[in-house]
Image (cartoon, rainbow, N blue to C red; front, side, top):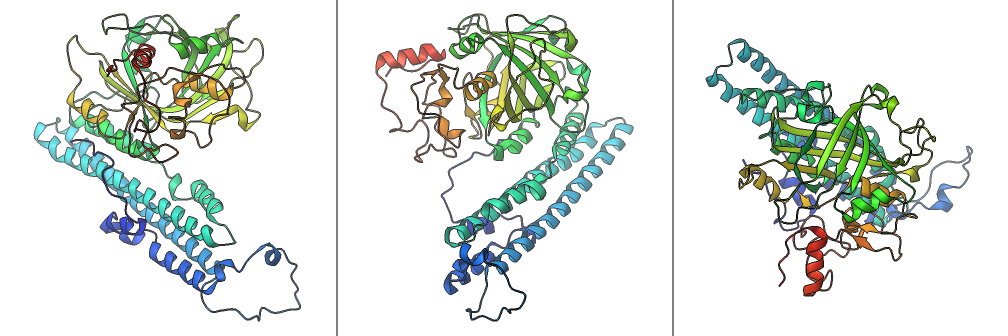
Length: 522
């Protein structure tokens, strides 16, 4: 099956799309958007949407008076608030109901799987159970669409309200919904179970925990691979995960029920940011030096000292970049010339067949970067952050597709389908370390990565970069960045005509050299 392409659908009013995109059996669980709109219309007609202001709300009250005043009939702010509250509770109830149905379906498949294994894993019994897995995968995607559609309905109706009302509600309500209600219920454990069941029915070995570190990643050995990086919007994360696990099972580094592992890395640099500059400019031999561990910091028993070395590969037949990994106890990590600089923290879902590294994918979500301020002889900080300015969260997931193919071999068809799905935005040479350093040490950096330019920054930042003369490095070819779903600040797709002046032949040649990419010199 192919991943559905995004885009291509004409813009329609949200109320219409809400009706047409509903899952019929869950229809009663969606926000009654029309009722909320009718209430707003009534408030606009009677003028009650503007009856409150600071002079009225902040006046003192008297227990010796009544509420017998002249006002037009109809809905008021309090009525609208009660209606919104009732809709939130309704969506919460339906969310719990749908979750229970999904878990029940998963339990039924699990029981069927146990009976299938007990019977000796007959081939004729796997196909029916696999169809149940696929039906549950589709239901999980429908459930996420249900959650997002309802959240968007609340966001849009509250935005309409605040456009006319003197009593703004949108921000506090959305903060409340994000913190306490239906959007907080995560189902990473379901993704993991579906992956394991599918892999078992298809005859693939499923592993998790310490044994998944194969020999190529232990004790000073090195492994070489080619990696392409992509940004994935949050709303497409589940869609991408469910597509990949049809072809590669979840590959866990740690024990636990969820599909993702917590990965933390401490990147080292010096006061001159030499390692940042080397990775930014992609000098041949430029290194990144980090200490990485998997799982919660409080449960860490082993960390990995890693050195990544960049190698130029101008014609595709040279030496590829390498990563060397050494396991060692964390209390033996010392450095005199380099100091802890930036910490990265994210949840990684890896996809790979055990013993087969031909195609390996990893999807990193909840990506955060933080300054790593610590004592002179420590290799990581021992206390919490002091201020919000010491941390930044990246808004997109980062997908890495790693291929190890025989000479002349082409990528599998399913990988090509994934890359052409429209859910990914290729970001060559995107680096968490470089981005974190650029964001958190802006006063010290002299050059910025290409995704900080005016073309690309609106794709990830809500605020524009400081207005200064810092140049940009690692410029990338813009022909392949057009995307209907993530426009630039002026609404024009990135890479479309008019975003930037055309390049002359020399500029295009320099662009190709800087990015190690082949760009037609037309």
